[in-house]
Image (cartoon, rainbow, N blue to C red):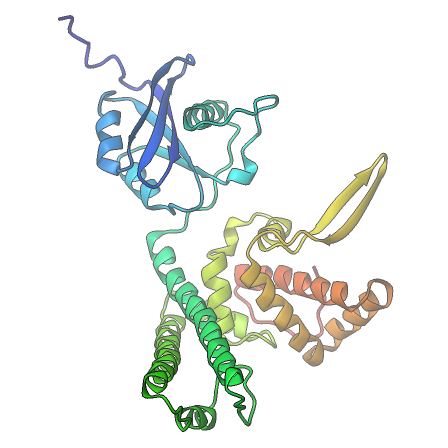
Amino acid sequence: MKKVDPTIWQDKPLYVGIDMHRKRWHISIRSADGQVLFSQRIEGRWPVLKHRLEKYPGAQFMAVYEAGYFGFWLYDELTAYGVTTCVTPPSLIPSASGNKVKTDRLDSDRLAQLLQAGLLTSVHVPTEQERAHRQVVRRRRQFIQDRIRVKNRIKAELRLYGLELSGETKGPWTQRLMTQLRAIRFADAFHQTSFIALLAHHDFLSSQIDLLAGQLKTLAESEIYQERVEILTSIPGIGWLSAMEILLELQDVARFQRAEQLAAYVGLTPGQHSSGEHVRLGRITRQGKSIVRTLLVLAAWRLIDKDGAMREKYERIKARAGGKRAIVAIARTLLVRLRRLLLNREPYVLGLVSG
């Protein structure tokens, strides 16, 4: 049997396309001269992929997989192994003209080919600590949505039996409202038990929301975030909790070289419509971080009540484009200003309009 020179791959660039699925991945490995060295399905686990890479000792690996469902754990493993890794957003992968056939093999082969050609864009990969802290704010948001669903179930249950609550049922429910609910009695004992369980579910979610808010408060007061939280809370309309949500979703704003990049990331850039030589800017694209966009719009409504210069800009835009576009314009101005404040490490000053 002919021996293979173990140094044959030393310092040779190899390009790895990874098409990930829950149980199995399709892996394509290409050499610099375009030769497909490997293109097969493997079990979807890092040790299996690592074993395959070990077949090419000394190679300089560059790998790519699509951002999304699988997060960044594979990025961590590949990077620790010395692989230069690109996590690319599916929306920015150049499409293959004329090829309507889609298979895992073609996907992984094309990813490797595009990586070699330098045609792929990588998403920003947060640090492990940033991801961990971001999960706290996202989990709290998930629980708030879960609680809304439970509250809707409770209200639907009451409607079925002609029962009504006195008091405001929007937003967090007061202790008075919960006392009313706990006092309700149904004739059937089994029904009563199920209703009590529904109320207990609501109470549990509320306790976990409060717990996670406490965790975020601790983070907000930590050395990592305290200065940035103080800067953001100097803006009328942004409290410490909103500040933490914005910071944890955006991470370090210095990674955006221009304000336009940040606006596009959040989804506060106008869509562009071209026809011949005419270019018209329309509504915002609504791509990007929807939660940050929502927080900025809410903050913008409060801001125009506190900052006369912002109110003047809002009224001016409203007169020609309407209230909705005007408040979105204020939100975008606020985002641009927010970026500058964080970069310059300075508080918000009323009466200045830029961006």
